[in-house]
Image (cartoon, rainbow, N blue to C red; front, side, top):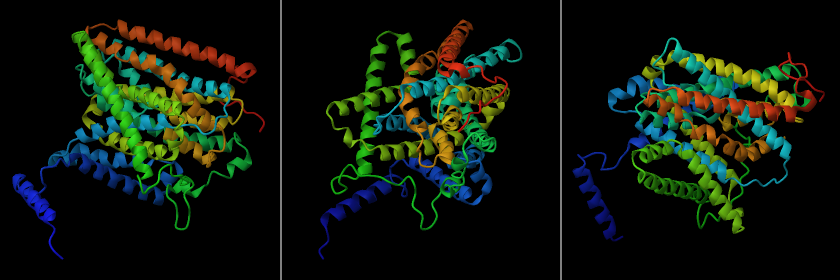
Length: 498
Protein backbone atom coordinates (compact mmCIF):
# COMPACT_ATOMS: atom_id res chain seq x y z
CA UNK A 1 0.00 0.00 0.00
CA UNK A 2 1.42 3.39 -0.99
CA UNK A 3 2.15 5.85 1.81
CA UNK A 4 -0.38 8.64 2.24
CA UNK A 5 1.26 12.06 1.75
CA UNK A 6 -1.09 13.73 4.23
CA UNK A 7 0.16 11.49 7.03
CA UNK A 8 3.75 12.62 6.43
CA UNK A 9 2.63 16.26 6.52
CA UNK A 10 0.76 15.65 9.81
CA UNK A 11 3.72 13.76 11.28
CA UNK A 12 6.09 16.58 10.37
CA UNK A 13 3.82 19.17 11.94
CA UNK A 14 3.56 17.16 15.16
CA UNK A 15 7.33 16.68 15.33
CA UNK A 16 7.89 20.42 14.91
CA UNK A 17 5.37 21.20 17.69
CA UNK A 18 7.07 18.66 19.99
CA UNK A 19 10.46 20.26 19.39
CA UNK A 20 9.06 23.77 19.92
CA UNK A 21 7.34 22.79 23.18
CA UNK A 22 10.39 21.24 24.78
CA UNK A 23 9.97 17.73 23.50
CA UNK A 24 7.11 16.24 25.46
CA UNK A 25 3.51 17.53 25.83
CA UNK A 26 3.05 19.60 22.68
CA UNK A 27 1.89 23.20 22.81
CA UNK A 28 -1.60 22.62 24.20
CA UNK A 29 -3.23 23.55 27.51
CA UNK A 30 -3.81 20.48 29.65
CA UNK A 31 -4.81 21.98 33.00
CA UNK A 32 -8.58 21.89 32.45
CA UNK A 33 -8.57 18.27 31.27
CA UNK A 34 -6.14 17.30 34.02
CA UNK A 35 -8.53 18.64 36.66
CA UNK A 36 -11.51 17.04 34.91
CA UNK A 37 -9.63 13.73 34.94
CA UNK A 38 -8.83 14.09 38.65
CA UNK A 39 -12.48 14.87 39.42
CA UNK A 40 -13.61 11.97 37.23
CA UNK A 41 -11.34 9.56 39.11
CA UNK A 42 -12.66 10.87 42.43
CA UNK A 43 -16.27 10.40 41.26
CA UNK A 44 -15.53 6.80 40.30
CA UNK A 45 -13.89 6.21 43.69
CA UNK A 46 -16.89 7.76 45.41
CA UNK A 47 -19.26 5.56 43.40
CA UNK A 48 -17.32 2.46 44.48
CA UNK A 49 -17.41 3.61 48.12
CA UNK A 50 -21.18 4.11 48.06
CA UNK A 51 -21.75 0.73 46.41
CA UNK A 52 -19.75 -0.98 49.19
CA UNK A 53 -20.16 1.03 52.38
CA UNK A 54 -23.52 0.89 54.13
CA UNK A 55 -23.06 4.29 55.83
CA UNK A 56 -23.08 6.09 52.47
CA UNK A 57 -26.06 4.02 51.31
CA UNK A 58 -28.03 4.65 54.48
CA UNK A 59 -27.64 8.43 54.32
CA UNK A 60 -27.74 8.61 50.50
CA UNK A 61 -24.55 10.68 50.45
CA UNK A 62 -24.28 12.08 46.89
CA UNK A 63 -21.20 10.70 45.14
CA UNK A 64 -20.20 14.20 44.09
CA UNK A 65 -20.11 15.25 47.76
CA UNK A 66 -17.88 12.30 48.67
CA UNK A 67 -15.62 12.99 45.69
CA UNK A 68 -15.26 16.62 46.74
CA UNK A 69 -14.19 15.71 50.26
CA UNK A 70 -11.73 13.15 48.89
CA UNK A 71 -10.13 15.90 46.81
CA UNK A 72 -10.29 18.65 49.46
CA UNK A 73 -7.03 17.69 51.27
CA UNK A 74 -5.26 17.02 47.97
CA UNK A 75 -5.99 20.46 46.52
CA UNK A 76 -5.19 22.17 49.84
CA UNK A 77 -1.97 20.43 50.87
CA UNK A 78 -0.67 18.06 48.17
CA UNK A 79 -1.32 19.41 44.68
CA UNK A 80 0.02 22.97 45.35
CA UNK A 81 3.45 21.40 45.84
CA UNK A 82 3.43 20.14 42.24
CA UNK A 83 1.99 23.29 40.72
CA UNK A 84 -1.72 22.33 40.57
CA UNK A 85 -3.99 25.08 41.87
CA UNK A 86 -7.75 25.58 42.04
CA UNK A 87 -8.23 28.03 39.16
CA UNK A 88 -9.59 25.36 36.83
CA UNK A 89 -11.89 24.07 39.58
CA UNK A 90 -13.32 27.56 40.01
CA UNK A 91 -13.89 27.81 36.26
CA UNK A 92 -15.67 24.44 36.31
CA UNK A 93 -17.94 25.60 39.15
CA UNK A 94 -18.78 28.84 37.35
CA UNK A 95 -19.41 27.48 33.86
CA UNK A 96 -21.03 24.18 34.82
CA UNK A 97 -23.47 26.05 37.04
CA UNK A 98 -24.55 28.12 34.05
CA UNK A 99 -24.81 25.06 31.82
CA UNK A 100 -26.94 23.21 34.38
CA UNK A 101 -29.29 26.22 34.62
CA UNK A 102 -29.69 26.28 30.84
CA UNK A 103 -30.26 22.53 30.56
CA UNK A 104 -32.98 22.51 33.21
CA UNK A 105 -34.67 25.66 31.88
CA UNK A 106 -34.82 24.35 28.31
CA UNK A 107 -36.84 21.32 29.39
CA UNK A 108 -40.39 21.18 28.02
CA UNK A 109 -43.11 19.68 30.18
CA UNK A 110 -44.88 16.84 28.36
CA UNK A 111 -47.52 16.64 31.07
CA UNK A 112 -49.73 19.73 30.87
CA UNK A 113 -51.82 18.73 33.88
CA UNK A 114 -51.20 20.94 36.85
CA UNK A 115 -52.93 22.50 39.80
CA UNK A 116 -52.37 26.22 40.11
CA UNK A 117 -52.84 25.95 43.84
CA UNK A 118 -50.20 23.23 44.25
CA UNK A 119 -47.74 25.13 42.05
CA UNK A 120 -48.29 28.32 44.07
CA UNK A 121 -48.00 26.41 47.35
CA UNK A 122 -44.72 24.85 46.22
CA UNK A 123 -43.32 28.22 45.21
CA UNK A 124 -44.45 29.71 48.53
CA UNK A 125 -42.66 27.03 50.53
CA UNK A 126 -39.43 27.48 48.55
CA UNK A 127 -39.55 31.26 48.85
CA UNK A 128 -40.32 31.04 52.57
CA UNK A 129 -37.00 29.30 53.06
CA UNK A 130 -35.19 31.92 50.97
CA UNK A 131 -36.72 34.60 53.20
CA UNK A 132 -36.05 32.85 56.51
CA UNK A 133 -32.44 32.07 55.57
CA UNK A 134 -31.73 35.62 54.36
CA UNK A 135 -33.39 37.17 57.38
CA UNK A 136 -31.67 35.03 60.02
CA UNK A 137 -28.29 35.12 58.29
CA UNK A 138 -28.34 38.92 58.14
CA UNK A 139 -29.51 39.27 61.75
CA UNK A 140 -26.68 37.03 62.99
CA UNK A 141 -24.15 38.92 60.87
CA UNK A 142 -25.25 42.28 62.29
CA UNK A 143 -25.04 40.92 65.84
CA UNK A 144 -21.48 39.71 65.21
CA UNK A 145 -20.51 43.07 63.69
CA UNK A 146 -21.89 44.91 66.72
CA UNK A 147 -20.15 42.59 69.21
CA UNK A 148 -17.09 40.42 68.58
CA UNK A 149 -16.40 40.83 64.83
CA UNK A 150 -16.73 44.50 63.82
CA UNK A 151 -14.78 43.92 60.61
CA UNK A 152 -17.01 41.12 59.32
CA UNK A 153 -18.31 41.54 55.77
CA UNK A 154 -21.92 42.79 56.23
CA UNK A 155 -23.29 40.59 53.46
CA UNK A 156 -21.93 37.42 55.07
CA UNK A 157 -25.36 36.25 56.17
CA UNK A 158 -26.61 36.00 52.61
CA UNK A 159 -24.34 32.99 52.14
CA UNK A 160 -26.95 31.03 54.11
CA UNK A 161 -29.36 31.35 51.19
CA UNK A 162 -26.73 31.27 48.45
CA UNK A 163 -25.12 28.10 49.77
CA UNK A 164 -28.24 26.30 50.97
CA UNK A 165 -31.18 27.19 48.72
CA UNK A 166 -29.24 28.21 45.59
CA UNK A 167 -26.21 25.91 45.82
CA UNK A 168 -22.40 26.13 45.75
CA UNK A 169 -22.22 27.43 42.19
CA UNK A 170 -24.29 30.52 42.86
CA UNK A 171 -22.61 31.07 46.24
CA UNK A 172 -19.18 30.90 44.62
CA UNK A 173 -20.15 33.14 41.70
CA UNK A 174 -21.55 35.91 43.89
CA UNK A 175 -18.80 35.50 46.49
CA UNK A 176 -16.20 35.84 43.74
CA UNK A 177 -17.96 39.00 42.59
CA UNK A 178 -17.52 40.42 46.09
CA UNK A 179 -13.85 39.48 45.94
CA UNK A 180 -13.42 41.75 42.91
CA UNK A 181 -14.72 44.56 45.12
CA UNK A 182 -11.90 43.96 47.61
CA UNK A 183 -13.40 41.44 50.08
CA UNK A 184 -10.98 38.53 50.16
CA UNK A 185 -11.85 34.85 50.52
CA UNK A 186 -15.60 35.13 49.99
CA UNK A 187 -15.66 32.80 46.99
CA UNK A 188 -14.32 30.03 49.18
CA UNK A 189 -16.79 30.96 51.94
CA UNK A 190 -19.58 30.46 49.41
CA UNK A 191 -18.24 27.03 48.51
CA UNK A 192 -18.08 26.14 52.21
CA UNK A 193 -21.73 27.03 52.77
CA UNK A 194 -22.63 25.01 49.69
CA UNK A 195 -20.85 21.97 51.13
CA UNK A 196 -22.54 22.45 54.52
CA UNK A 197 -25.88 22.67 52.75
CA UNK A 198 -25.30 19.27 51.16
CA UNK A 199 -24.48 17.84 54.60
CA UNK A 200 -27.77 19.18 55.96
CA UNK A 201 -29.58 17.80 52.89
CA UNK A 202 -28.03 14.33 53.21
CA UNK A 203 -28.12 13.70 56.95
CA UNK A 204 -31.12 15.90 57.72
CA UNK A 205 -33.01 14.58 54.71
CA UNK A 206 -32.42 10.92 55.54
CA UNK A 207 -33.38 11.57 59.17
CA UNK A 208 -36.56 13.27 57.95
CA UNK A 209 -37.46 10.33 55.68
CA UNK A 210 -36.76 7.68 58.33
CA UNK A 211 -38.49 9.64 61.09
CA UNK A 212 -41.53 10.27 58.89
CA UNK A 213 -41.77 6.59 58.01
CA UNK A 214 -41.53 5.53 61.67
CA UNK A 215 -44.19 8.06 62.66
CA UNK A 216 -46.56 6.92 59.92
CA UNK A 217 -46.43 10.06 57.81
CA UNK A 218 -46.75 7.82 54.73
CA UNK A 219 -48.80 4.68 54.18
CA UNK A 220 -47.55 1.09 54.59
CA UNK A 221 -47.72 0.50 50.84
CA UNK A 222 -45.56 3.52 50.17
CA UNK A 223 -43.19 2.42 52.91
CA UNK A 224 -42.37 -0.83 51.09
CA UNK A 225 -40.69 1.10 48.27
CA UNK A 226 -37.96 2.56 50.46
CA UNK A 227 -35.43 -0.28 50.23
CA UNK A 228 -34.96 0.01 46.48
CA UNK A 229 -31.43 -1.35 45.86
CA UNK A 230 -30.59 0.91 42.91
CA UNK A 231 -31.36 4.00 44.95
CA UNK A 232 -29.40 2.79 47.96
CA UNK A 233 -26.31 1.45 46.18
CA UNK A 234 -26.24 4.10 43.47
CA UNK A 235 -25.38 1.56 40.74
CA UNK A 236 -27.26 -1.09 38.82
CA UNK A 237 -26.36 -4.71 39.51
CA UNK A 238 -25.47 -7.28 36.86
CA UNK A 239 -28.60 -8.13 34.87
CA UNK A 240 -30.58 -5.14 36.17
CA UNK A 241 -31.88 -2.27 34.03
CA UNK A 242 -31.59 1.28 35.23
CA UNK A 243 -34.96 2.84 35.98
CA UNK A 244 -33.87 6.13 34.46
CA UNK A 245 -32.52 4.76 31.18
CA UNK A 246 -35.61 5.07 28.97
CA UNK A 247 -34.41 7.60 26.37
CA UNK A 248 -36.03 8.32 22.99
CA UNK A 249 -33.81 9.72 20.24
CA UNK A 250 -34.91 12.99 18.63
CA UNK A 251 -32.28 12.85 15.86
CA UNK A 252 -30.88 10.11 13.67
CA UNK A 253 -27.44 9.09 14.98
CA UNK A 254 -26.27 8.70 11.38
CA UNK A 255 -26.72 12.44 10.89
CA UNK A 256 -25.82 13.68 14.36
CA UNK A 257 -25.61 11.94 17.70
CA UNK A 258 -28.66 12.87 19.83
CA UNK A 259 -26.44 13.82 22.76
CA UNK A 260 -24.29 15.99 20.50
CA UNK A 261 -27.42 17.75 19.20
CA UNK A 262 -28.76 18.42 22.70
CA UNK A 263 -25.36 19.53 23.95
CA UNK A 264 -25.10 21.82 20.94
CA UNK A 265 -28.43 23.41 21.86
CA UNK A 266 -27.24 24.00 25.44
CA UNK A 267 -23.85 25.39 24.39
CA UNK A 268 -25.37 27.62 21.70
CA UNK A 269 -27.76 29.03 24.30
CA UNK A 270 -24.79 29.65 26.59
CA UNK A 271 -23.06 31.53 23.77
CA UNK A 272 -26.15 33.71 23.29
CA UNK A 273 -26.21 34.48 27.02
CA UNK A 274 -22.51 35.38 26.92
CA UNK A 275 -22.95 37.66 23.90
CA UNK A 276 -25.99 39.31 25.48
CA UNK A 277 -24.22 40.07 28.75
CA UNK A 278 -21.12 41.22 26.88
CA UNK A 279 -23.22 43.72 24.93
CA UNK A 280 -24.96 44.89 28.11
CA UNK A 281 -21.59 45.32 29.85
CA UNK A 282 -20.31 47.53 27.04
CA UNK A 283 -23.41 49.69 27.25
CA UNK A 284 -23.02 50.02 31.01
CA UNK A 285 -19.36 50.98 30.55
CA UNK A 286 -20.56 54.13 28.81
CA UNK A 287 -21.93 55.28 32.17
CA UNK A 288 -18.46 55.48 33.71
CA UNK A 289 -16.99 53.74 36.75
CA UNK A 290 -20.37 53.00 38.34
CA UNK A 291 -21.51 51.29 35.14
CA UNK A 292 -18.31 49.24 34.95
CA UNK A 293 -18.78 48.17 38.58
CA UNK A 294 -22.37 47.14 37.92
CA UNK A 295 -21.33 45.19 34.83
CA UNK A 296 -18.65 43.37 36.86
CA UNK A 297 -21.24 42.41 39.46
CA UNK A 298 -23.65 41.16 36.79
CA UNK A 299 -21.08 38.62 35.62
CA UNK A 300 -21.24 37.17 39.12
CA UNK A 301 -24.92 36.30 38.55
CA UNK A 302 -24.44 35.03 35.02
CA UNK A 303 -26.73 32.10 35.81
CA UNK A 304 -29.71 34.50 35.85
CA UNK A 305 -28.94 35.63 32.30
CA UNK A 306 -28.50 32.00 31.31
CA UNK A 307 -31.95 31.18 32.68
CA UNK A 308 -33.54 34.17 30.93
CA UNK A 309 -31.79 33.34 27.64
CA UNK A 310 -32.90 29.71 27.89
CA UNK A 311 -36.50 30.86 28.42
CA UNK A 312 -36.24 33.03 25.30
CA UNK A 313 -34.76 30.19 23.24
CA UNK A 314 -37.49 27.80 24.42
CA UNK A 315 -40.18 30.37 23.56
CA UNK A 316 -38.62 30.82 20.10
CA UNK A 317 -38.63 27.07 19.49
CA UNK A 318 -42.24 26.77 20.68
CA UNK A 319 -43.32 29.65 18.44
CA UNK A 320 -42.15 27.68 15.40
CA UNK A 321 -43.84 24.52 16.71
CA UNK A 322 -40.61 22.52 16.75
CA UNK A 323 -40.42 21.90 20.49
CA UNK A 324 -40.36 18.18 19.71
CA UNK A 325 -36.61 18.58 19.11
CA UNK A 326 -36.09 19.28 22.82
CA UNK A 327 -34.86 16.08 24.47
CA UNK A 328 -35.83 16.29 28.14
CA UNK A 329 -34.02 13.09 29.12
CA UNK A 330 -30.69 14.18 27.70
CA UNK A 331 -31.10 17.70 29.01
CA UNK A 332 -31.52 16.12 32.44
CA UNK A 333 -28.37 14.05 31.87
CA UNK A 334 -26.41 17.16 30.84
CA UNK A 335 -27.67 18.99 33.91
CA UNK A 336 -26.80 16.03 36.13
CA UNK A 337 -23.31 15.76 34.61
CA UNK A 338 -22.75 19.48 35.17
CA UNK A 339 -24.03 19.38 38.75
CA UNK A 340 -21.93 16.34 39.74
CA UNK A 341 -18.70 17.83 38.41
CA UNK A 342 -19.64 21.26 39.76
CA UNK A 343 -20.29 20.00 43.30
CA UNK A 344 -17.12 17.91 43.43
CA UNK A 345 -15.10 20.88 42.13
CA UNK A 346 -16.77 23.29 44.55
CA UNK A 347 -15.84 21.27 47.63
CA UNK A 348 -12.32 20.52 46.37
CA UNK A 349 -11.73 24.24 45.74
CA UNK A 350 -12.57 25.28 49.31
CA UNK A 351 -9.63 27.00 50.99
CA UNK A 352 -8.92 25.53 54.42
CA UNK A 353 -7.21 28.78 55.43
CA UNK A 354 -10.36 30.80 54.66
CA UNK A 355 -12.56 28.38 56.63
CA UNK A 356 -10.27 28.74 59.67
CA UNK A 357 -10.38 32.54 59.35
CA UNK A 358 -14.20 32.71 59.28
CA UNK A 359 -15.05 29.64 61.34
CA UNK A 360 -17.11 31.53 63.96
CA UNK A 361 -19.67 33.12 61.59
CA UNK A 362 -19.69 30.02 59.40
CA UNK A 363 -20.47 27.76 62.37
CA UNK A 364 -23.10 30.07 63.87
CA UNK A 365 -24.95 30.92 60.68
CA UNK A 366 -24.85 27.44 59.15
CA UNK A 367 -26.09 25.76 62.36
CA UNK A 368 -28.84 28.22 63.30
CA UNK A 369 -30.10 28.58 59.73
CA UNK A 370 -29.92 24.82 59.17
CA UNK A 371 -32.05 24.13 62.24
CA UNK A 372 -34.50 26.90 61.37
CA UNK A 373 -34.85 25.62 57.80
CA UNK A 374 -35.52 22.07 58.96
CA UNK A 375 -38.13 22.79 61.63
CA UNK A 376 -39.92 25.69 59.92
CA UNK A 377 -40.20 23.85 56.61
CA UNK A 378 -41.64 20.67 58.14
CA UNK A 379 -44.14 22.63 60.26
CA UNK A 380 -45.31 24.86 57.40
CA UNK A 381 -45.44 22.21 54.67
CA UNK A 382 -47.52 19.78 56.73
CA UNK A 383 -50.23 22.44 56.92
CA UNK A 384 -49.99 24.01 53.45
CA UNK A 385 -50.16 21.03 51.09
CA UNK A 386 -53.39 19.12 50.52
CA UNK A 387 -52.10 15.85 49.04
CA UNK A 388 -48.84 13.90 48.84
CA UNK A 389 -47.74 16.12 51.70
CA UNK A 390 -44.69 14.16 52.85
CA UNK A 391 -43.41 13.74 49.28
CA UNK A 392 -43.56 17.46 48.61
CA UNK A 393 -41.96 18.22 51.98
CA UNK A 394 -39.00 15.90 51.37
CA UNK A 395 -38.36 17.24 47.85
CA UNK A 396 -38.42 20.89 48.87
CA UNK A 397 -36.29 20.24 51.95
CA UNK A 398 -33.56 18.67 49.81
CA UNK A 399 -33.71 21.56 47.35
CA UNK A 400 -33.69 24.17 50.15
CA UNK A 401 -30.51 22.78 51.70
CA UNK A 402 -28.64 21.15 48.83
CA UNK A 403 -29.73 21.41 45.20
CA UNK A 404 -32.68 20.17 43.15
CA UNK A 405 -30.87 16.87 42.28
CA UNK A 406 -30.41 16.27 46.02
CA UNK A 407 -34.10 16.89 46.60
CA UNK A 408 -34.98 14.50 43.79
CA UNK A 409 -32.64 11.86 45.26
CA UNK A 410 -34.45 12.11 48.60
CA UNK A 411 -37.84 11.97 46.90
CA UNK A 412 -36.78 8.88 44.96
CA UNK A 413 -36.50 6.93 48.23
CA UNK A 414 -40.25 7.06 48.74
CA UNK A 415 -41.29 7.72 45.12
CA UNK A 416 -38.86 5.73 42.93
CA UNK A 417 -40.73 6.31 39.66
CA UNK A 418 -41.77 9.91 40.45
CA UNK A 419 -45.39 8.81 40.20
CA UNK A 420 -46.64 11.51 42.58
CA UNK A 421 -47.13 15.09 41.34
CA UNK A 422 -44.45 16.42 43.74
CA UNK A 423 -41.60 16.67 41.22
CA UNK A 424 -43.89 17.85 38.40
CA UNK A 425 -45.34 20.68 40.47
CA UNK A 426 -41.87 21.68 41.64
CA UNK A 427 -40.74 22.07 38.02
CA UNK A 428 -43.86 24.09 37.17
CA UNK A 429 -43.20 26.35 40.16
CA UNK A 430 -39.54 26.96 39.26
CA UNK A 431 -40.31 29.83 36.88
CA UNK A 432 -42.48 31.67 39.42
CA UNK A 433 -39.94 31.07 42.18
CA UNK A 434 -37.11 32.30 39.97
CA UNK A 435 -38.91 35.54 39.13
CA UNK A 436 -39.91 36.19 42.74
CA UNK A 437 -36.33 35.63 43.97
CA UNK A 438 -34.70 38.06 41.53
CA UNK A 439 -34.96 41.07 43.93
CA UNK A 440 -32.98 39.09 46.54
CA UNK A 441 -30.21 38.37 44.07
CA UNK A 442 -30.14 41.84 42.51
CA UNK A 443 -29.83 43.50 45.93
CA UNK A 444 -27.10 41.12 47.07
CA UNK A 445 -24.39 43.71 46.41
CA UNK A 446 -25.96 46.45 48.54
CA UNK A 447 -24.18 45.45 51.81
CA UNK A 448 -20.89 45.28 49.92
CA UNK A 449 -21.40 48.73 48.39
CA UNK A 450 -22.21 50.07 51.84
CA UNK A 451 -19.13 48.44 53.35
CA UNK A 452 -16.93 50.17 50.79
CA UNK A 453 -18.30 53.47 52.12
CA UNK A 454 -18.12 52.36 55.77
CA UNK A 455 -21.91 52.28 56.14
CA UNK A 456 -24.30 49.58 57.37
CA UNK A 457 -27.35 51.42 56.05
CA UNK A 458 -27.64 49.29 52.87
CA UNK A 459 -27.46 46.17 55.04
CA UNK A 460 -30.40 47.38 57.11
CA UNK A 461 -32.23 48.16 53.87
CA UNK A 462 -31.85 44.61 52.53
CA UNK A 463 -32.89 43.32 55.96
CA UNK A 464 -36.08 45.33 55.44
CA UNK A 465 -36.53 43.63 52.06
CA UNK A 466 -36.11 40.19 53.67
CA UNK A 467 -38.68 41.16 56.30
CA UNK A 468 -41.15 42.01 53.54
CA UNK A 469 -40.50 38.58 51.99
CA UNK A 470 -41.15 36.87 55.35
CA UNK A 471 -44.42 38.78 55.79
CA UNK A 472 -45.52 38.06 52.20
CA UNK A 473 -44.86 34.34 52.69
CA UNK A 474 -46.79 34.48 55.96
CA UNK A 475 -49.81 36.00 54.18
CA UNK A 476 -49.56 33.30 51.47
CA UNK A 477 -49.35 30.65 54.19
CA UNK A 478 -52.49 31.93 55.91
CA UNK A 479 -54.33 31.81 52.59
CA UNK A 480 -53.12 28.33 51.61
CA UNK A 481 -53.38 26.55 54.96
CA UNK A 482 -57.03 27.45 55.62
CA UNK A 483 -58.38 25.85 58.79
CA UNK A 484 -55.11 23.98 59.31
CA UNK A 485 -53.07 27.18 59.76
CA UNK A 486 -52.90 26.97 63.57
CA UNK A 487 -53.99 23.38 64.14
CA UNK A 488 -51.91 21.63 66.85
CA UNK A 489 -49.22 24.33 66.85
CA UNK A 490 -47.01 22.36 69.25
CA UNK A 491 -46.78 19.47 66.75
CA UNK A 492 -44.06 19.86 64.12
CA UNK A 493 -46.06 17.63 61.74
CA UNK A 494 -49.82 17.90 61.34
CA UNK A 495 -50.75 14.26 60.86
CA UNK A 496 -53.73 13.38 58.70
CA UNK A 497 -55.58 10.26 57.65
CA UNK A 498 -54.15 8.50 54.58
